[in-house]
Amino acid sequence: MRDWAYNLKKGFRSLRRMTTFQWILFVAMTLLAAFMLLPIVYLVNHALKPFNELFLYPPTFIAKQPTLQNFTDLIVVTQSSAVPVTRYLFNSIVMSVLVFFTSCLISVLCAYPLSKHKFPGRGIIFSGIIISLMFAPEMVGIPRYFVISNLGIINTYWGHVLPLVAMPVGVFLMKQFIDQIPDELLEAAKVEGAKELRIFAKIVVPLCMPAVATTAILSFQTAWSSDETSTLFMEDETMKTLPFFVNTLTNNLSNNVANQGAAAAVALLLFLPNFIIFLAMQKKVITTMMHSGIK
Amino acid sequence: MLPFKRRISIEAREAFSAYALLTPWLVGLGLFVLYPLIYSFYMSFQNVRVTGDGLIMQPVGFLNYKNAFLQDSDFPLMLVRYMQETILTIPVIVLFSLLVGIMLNMKLPGKGVFRAIFFLPVIFATGQVLNEIFNQGAAGLSLLEQYNIQPYIESNLPKMFSDPLLAVLNKFVIVLWYSGVQIIIIVAGLQTIGRPVYEAAGIDGASRWETFWKITLPALTPFILLNTIYTVVEMFTFPFSPILGLITNHMKYTGYGYASALGWVYFSIAFVLILLVIWFFKRIDGQSEKRR
Image (cartoon, rainbow over all chains, first blue to last red; front, side):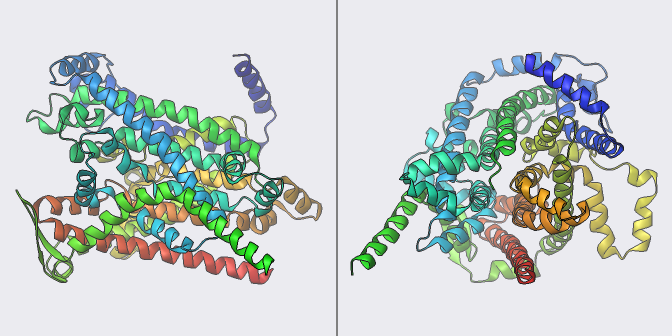
C-alpha cells in the first residue's frame, strides 16, 4: 500500500517536471491507451446492458441503464442444464492449469537446445516448427481425432490437454530470446561446473522470462477459451468445458435471441480469469525486462 | 588418439542432452501437429466421404487442387483479396509496434501502466469479444466517412490498391489491438541494448537521430524479424479469417478432401511469405555485416 502511495507521489512529481516533448508523448500514449482499453469497457458494459439495449444499432459502448438482469438470467439458465455448471467450470480449470504449466515447460525445454546446442537434425526440427507455426487447428480436426482415439484418451483430461500443449509460437518466441544470450555466459557456467539442468534453470529460464510469461499468457488464454477439444474429443457431457457450455447457450437453441443477455454475462465471467492471469504474468514480463539487461 | 576420442564424446554428450530436452516436445509435435498435417496432405489428394464405418477414400490425384482454382467461384477471389489486405496490414502492425515500443522505452511518467495497457489486447487476440465488436462495426474509423477520405482514396487510386487500403483503414483499431505481443517483443529487445553503448555514442558526439539509425535499429533487427513472422502467422491463423471460415464450411458440406486441398494452398502461401521475410532480413543483415 505504501508502495502505491510512494509511486503516485513520485509520478506526480515527475509530471510537473516534464518537458514539452514528454507532454506530447504522454498525451499521445494516453489516447492510444484509451483505444486499447475499449474492448474491456465494451465487455463490461455489454454484460450490464438491459435486453433492449443489447441489439441496438449502431452498438453503444456505454450501457444507458445498467442492470444485473443478465446475471440473474444466467443463474436461471444454468439451473436448468443437465450437467451442473460447476462441473464445466471444474473441467475448464483443471484443463487450463495443466496446459498452462506443461506448455510453458515443454516449450522452454525445446527452445533451449534448439538455440544453444549443436546436434544433428537441428535444422530439420526447426523447420518442422516453422511449418507447424502456420497451421490452424481447424484444419487438422479429423486426423487429430484419429490420434486421440488410437491413444485411447477420448473422454479424459489428456484429450483436452495434449492437443493444446504444443505451442510452436511459444517455442519460436523463446528461441529468439535465448539466441540473444551470449554463449560466453553459458560457457562460463559450464567451466564453473554447472550441469545442464542447472544452467537451464538458473540462467536460461530467468533470462528469457518475458518470452516465457508471454507464452504462459497465450497458452492459458487458448486453453481457457477453447471449445474445440470439447466438441471433437469429448463424448461424455460431464467432461466438457465452460466455453462449450457458453456456445450451447447461444448456438444450439432455436430461440437464440433469448439467451443473449446470459451469454454477455458469461463472456464477462469467462474473461475475468484471463485478466487475472494477465495481471499476474505481465508484471513478471515487465519487471524481468527492466532488471535482466541480457547484454 | 585420446584427445580425438574425448572430443567426439563431448559432442555426442551435447547431442544426447539436447535430444533429452527435446523429446517431450518432439513427441507432442509429431503426434498432434506433424502427423495430422501429413494426413491432411494425403487427404487433399482423395475424395473423402464420412460413413458409419469410418472414412472412405478414393484417390483423385490433383482434382481437388484443380477444382479449387478452376471450378470454385469464391476461393481464388477471396484468397487474392485477403492476401492484398494481409500484405498491407503486416507492415502497418510491424511499424506501429516498433513505434510504440520505442515510445514506451522513453522516459515517461506512468511507463509501467502504459506497458501493461498496450500488452492487454493480447488476451483478446483470439477472443470472441473482438470479433463481436468488429462485426457490429464499432471498430471502424468513423473519421473516414466524416472527412470524405473514402471517396478521395477511391477516385485517386486504382481499385486494386484502394479496396485493400480502405479495408485496412477500416480495421485500424483492430490493427492496434493486434500488436500487443509485438510491442512487448520490441520493448524487450530494447532492453538488450546496454546503456554503455549509448553513452559511448553520446561521448563521440552522435546525435539522437544518428544513434537511432546506427545503434538502436540494427540491434532491433532480429526482433523486428521475429515480429514480422509472428504477424504473418497471426494474420493467417486468425480464427475469423474469411478463408478459414470458407475451409470449415467446405469441411462440413463439400468434403474433407477438398477442404484439405484448400487448406494446403492457404498454408503454402503463408509458408512462402515467411520464407521471403526470412530471406529479406538475411539480406539486410548480410549488407550491414559487409559495411562493418
